[in-house]
Image 1 (cartoon, rainbow, N blue to C red):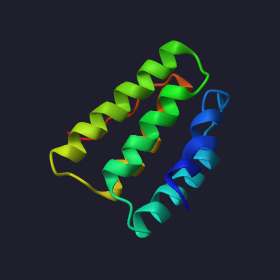
Image 2 (image 1 turned 90 degrees about the vertical axis):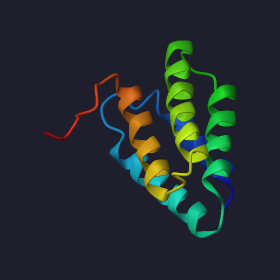
Image 3 (image 1 turned 90 degrees about the horizontal axis):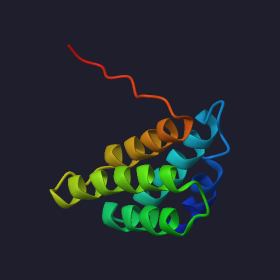
Image 4 (image 1 turned 180 degrees about the vertical axis):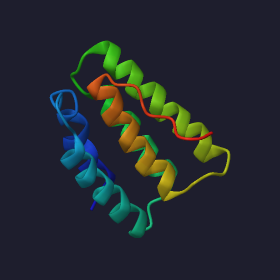
Length: 107
């Protein structure tokens, strides 16, 4: 498995207007397998960025994706290099593709 195996997930997100649960489950499986294969979070984040940058999609959505990838990239550089950050990014990209606002849990 290579980090570029995430490309089909990113390219199919803009078309997934109703639900992207199956897509996100598959993408989380790929991310988890890459993590278990020894790829660092920086490698996976860099691949997310390159794929998104070169993907043919709506420019506003592309900018939102790049923004989310950049936020996670900063967290990883700050030392929070975990599988949770990467799978959270997958979820945030799905939310952005649907045009919904994420539900914030807390007090």
